[in-house]
Image 1: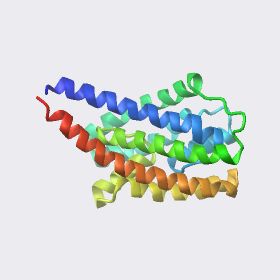
Image 2 (image 1 turned 90 degrees about the horizontal axis):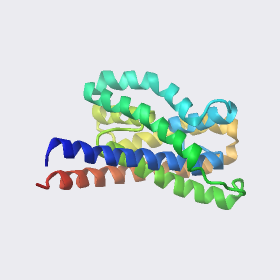
Image 3 (image 1 turned 60 degrees about the vertical axis):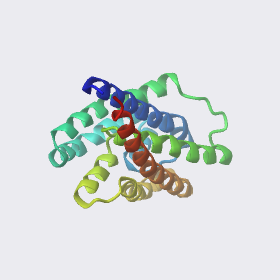
Image 4 (image 1 turned 60 degrees about the horizontal axis):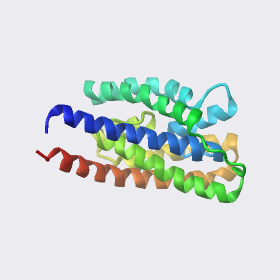
Length: 212
């Protein structure tokens, strides 16, 4: 398989990952007013407290210092794919928020919150897993997790769960501690889904690239 075809396949799966992650944030975690932690959670918190900041804008601002750290530790190629992610992922968040946002009349109900925590976590976990498995990331604590993975071989999903827990405590103070249980479950599901999807994505990538 030619390098051009390989790059095209990576491009398609990475963008699919961005799209799924953005859908999970825009249509489930955001409307439910709770966070899964990480930069996603901090961005939702900023959007809730300061409505003039969109979730995508907040994520971009938070990502700048982490990007610099990741570029220094993980190298030039990683820096290039991260720049791509930092530009394109907020675009997907904006696009889904502007054109693909669902209307939930009962977004405050317990039934919706349960659906949101499960569906949102799975969407985000698969999305993050796809982007990492095919050579990119969605920024934020994913970069931190990849740094820890390179330096200490910690599983990416596990580091994400720890980082999420820290942010959950911060967000709970502002959004209410009744959201903590949802956030903990959501973070756990995201972490497990990320680890599973990365493993499957790498295997899929290897199988596809082995084709003549």
